[in-house]
Length: 126
Image 1 (cartoon, rainbow, N blue to C red):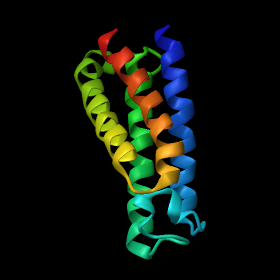
Image 2 (spheres, rainbow, N blue to C red):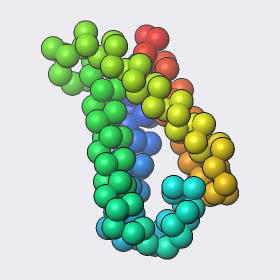
Image 3 (cartoon, helix red, strand yellow):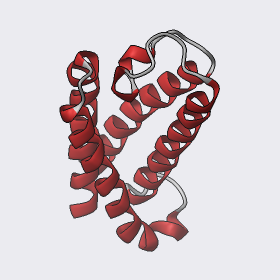
Image 4 (spheres, helix red, strand yellow):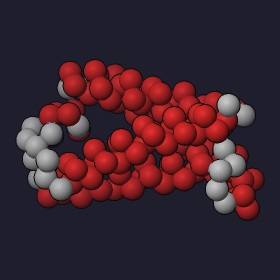
């Protein structure tokens, strides 16, 4: 069951990474992220932040994979602590996506962040 949680987490994390990278490359989906503050294409600084957010999500996918025992077995012990950072980030993500004024973030982002949170809690507790 731990592997299933890791695969679910990584699937949705990959979707988020791709979305962030497409925003960084200039896709006009700004109303779907950052509270809808930048409708259309993101300005250059926000594009850079989208790259950072995508990289952070990819890193969390690696941590989840280590915790599930899928990769880098030598880092498994340290993943027992670092996975809680992933959980904390996902708690903040859920709060942000539920509290945003962007309707689309509440409709799309909140369910995705709740799934990511659930999977990360399951892995952290396992």
